[in-house]
Image 1 (spheres, rainbow, N blue to C red):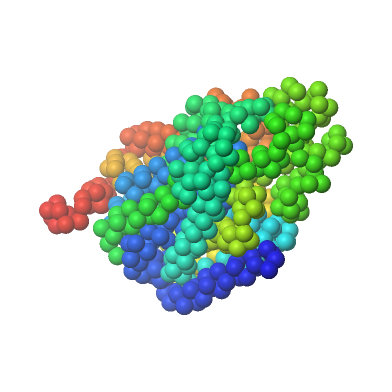
Image 2: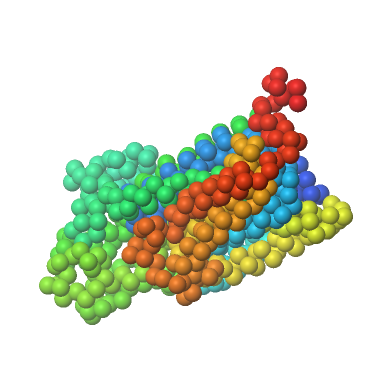
Length: 590
């Protein structure tokens, strides 16, 4: 059976499963649609949270970033994992105790201001739309290769599938679908990682294979061999830090606090029966997430090693070391058709020269005229890895299904968060307070449809790799939503004026900084300055600026709050009540 037919069958079977679950889980009222009637078991919610959290950026792009960034790629692992711990310990239990449907609703009531609620909605939609662009990019990458269609057609197919099961089931349907998607994506990620680790190192556990010696008899460790191959081609060592320390620190922090401010993840903790269950589901989610996150560094390193050995099968630095284009494996030409991998024979010798033009001094003596791998989209590395390693077609098809599951699960969660903000916060909470449950449910479904169209359009013009786009979304959430929630829970003194000023200042400065280097809606053609370290303010990458935006948010909120009247006593009592654990004597007094 051909790879394409097998892939269509495997992916098609998962689609049938997702749509069947969505139809069986059709939301009957707003409680079903927004919070799955608060009846999800903690273990199942942990699994659904893991699927919601492990997006296309985690499944497809993170290992690709690690493959090319090496040590610097660890900031994504540290930031996202640390951020989830921050969310689980500092925010989730208190927000669940508050007992509302949305983050915006919490901010509106905590800061006793409908305007604060609308500002929170604007922040939420800005971060969520940016995040969903990365998911649509991932969907397009997967479909373009697996179905042999263009990137654009792949995105349209993904939009249709998400529309069907998100509109039908709401949070109830999305939760049940995400449980199935977690099982698919984690199996799809682990199986090829085990195969490739065995192939390269003889070690069946990828996490241990990363630090093991190669099974080729050289006696070299995997990372030592990779360091040597890259440096001989003029690239920096794989294990060396290449990003400035300030960007490592600020990007890690931006990803951490951005994670804790992402509404689609926070919403998952509203779906369990109690605060105790919210804490338990947070722990289970961390276990489920760790399975993939501890595997990703090994997948990234092994993917880069396999790519190098495909293009550079002979002695490194030798004119005969690189491969003839006519002899490249079938996977190479298949990915070329997608436009995500491109080769240009600049000197007409029929061979592929792949090197860092700034570092390889021998290139000129060989008559090489520039790096001929003019495009290697990092988002293809996980998907292409099984093909590069020569694994069976069923493994390749499985990885495709896993990548689609990861992208669809997070896209559905994000679109639901956007739709909930529009229908529950903007319409029901402000413009149309008299609508009934059925009308609100109808508007929620219309909002999801509109959000999918916008997300698809922006996904056709992404500003970077999926994980890089997602990092921008985390920066926006870090600079706007996270400080407002933190101060709302842990500070009695911050008032409505301070919170509103802080959110606007944090989001505004971060958007301006991103606009300068990424452009309007993050399109490069509208950027004011080239996006490189020579132009960045204090050397700060736009992806790292969320930390600065958050500090501005905190500072402005406190200055304005202390310059104006304190919150009403009822709000201070509300904060105290949220912070007291249920079952304690103090809680009973309240």
